[in-house]
Image 1 (tube, rainbow, N blue to C red):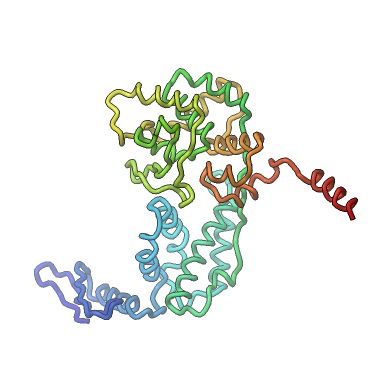
Image 2 (cartoon, helix red, strand yellow):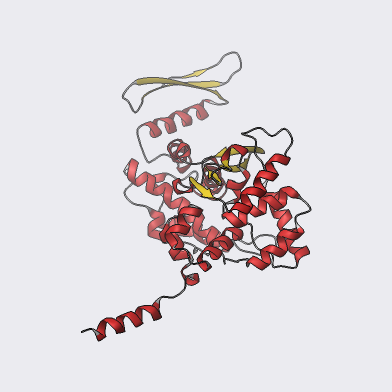
Length: 358
């Protein structure tokens, strides 16, 4: 690859020729290098990337990983992964050759993560440690599958951290009633929490709702998008999972309430968000309402748990509940098994009856 000097400003540039994934010959020009050495180093890494040479630095391989992975994920999901890569992986592994990173390197990095303490002397949570390690392992797995890396040193080193399931908290109907009565002074807050509690939808699903999503004749609300705040801007994305795309039948009282609320919004267009606030607003209102009502403060997401708990108490099956809230039924069974009434005694009685018939 020829390297040239720009005589006008003294910088260097590279004219790189390569063969793309379709076998076509291409050319790339990279400008702005301060020294010839910088241009040569860029040329060397570029060649390694296009020949799948795993002598390339970890940071160069991450560029390949990003190109293939970023567009397959939601933007907020990728931003979370990128933050971990930039702040926890690249500072340690960035300059090391992919092919030369060993289990010992990974274990040394793990020890640094485990030893970390913030200004309040608090370590990383077990869940965060596991998430960071899983991201490192995912990059090496990608190299094993697509670039013939012999093995995954992160997998060999073993996991770091454990998954901590956050304790589910619930509001009873009485607790929610006390809360809802004190937030009635702000109509937007009241109707938002009504949707969260009586439909069991997620925060992002609530904040993406438009007037067009409601069919008041059929008494339904359609869930087909989610709201995120990214880079300081409002972003509407697809829902969390395919199962999250669903139509929910609303109780009649809620249908009447939402019809009244939407009719109160001046100048509302069909595709305008009916709750044009952020998640921070909901959290602030949850703080305020719980304090005034004298009920325990739960997370916004715990309203979803409260809805599911209510449906279980009413006798609905895991399959029926899963369809309503956009879960797989097996997940409802696994996460809420302790709330379903035990059938053990009934089973034993029927087995006694069957045995008596022998």
